[in-house]
Image (tube, rainbow over all chains, first blue to last red; front, side):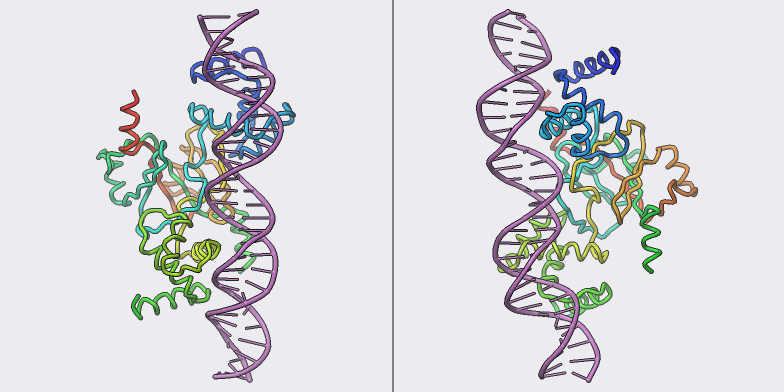
Length: 147
Length: 147
DNA sequence: TTGACTTTTAATAACTATTATCGTTTAATA
DNA sequence: TATTAAACGATAATAGTTATTAAAAGTCAA
């Protein structure tokens, strides 16, 4: 970590209104250095290499702080508990970034909206996310070898 | 539940290769009757009204059986544990419906793909899902009243 | 229909991920 | 530097889910 990196982190914390602590900085640095979609546990294991006395709870708390401050994002807003999709129609979801409520929206209705109309329920869109769901190569191969 | 409903459920189970049991049928019926995105606990509470002796574990197992059989779907494939998004670029996710692995895909790359080209990593797309993330009315109001 | 075999079930223990508590330490700032 | 609020570590507690096991119910060939 260079001096300019440290200054940058200080500036980041200042604008987010959070304190600069050693633990926080190391969690941040490790997150930046990690690729993919690490779990708190994975972050903890790496941070622990540098701060052996750190607590898992501290890692959790800092990750949450970063997410609340918009410094990092969670991959999915609806982890936590299994939810069953009871709507059999082709539809999308309006997901509230704050309360995490999920509202269904007809596939047709969404097409209209994306052409400039407003969304139902006075929903205020912040970002769109397209999920492509399917099979990765490994699972395609597993499936092929089974049949 | 009519006789034809019962027959329909039997046919459904037959084609899925699973046994027809009373508990399974009641879980199925309640799921069909529920709107939104119920949690196993919520399903359990309703099923319990009809089968007081049922166990929560049975509800879980039947929900999983339905999902594996493609009779119902989960709202999100990545519930279970918090994941941090470390990729700051605008991107989408390739989510494997089997192993639930998440692969990042550049927003640009995705545009190309949707015009007919193939996806990276030999990913086999099954369905696309558009998520609109933002604020629901309630949270917009909460936010307005705070500031 | 019966008997052999398989699946499902209920009860409950166990496990994983996460959060709350609380006494101590550290950072911000006057 | 002293004060105060924020953050920390240890650990207990909780929520959601899964594993285990013996009993009950379902399946299927004869």
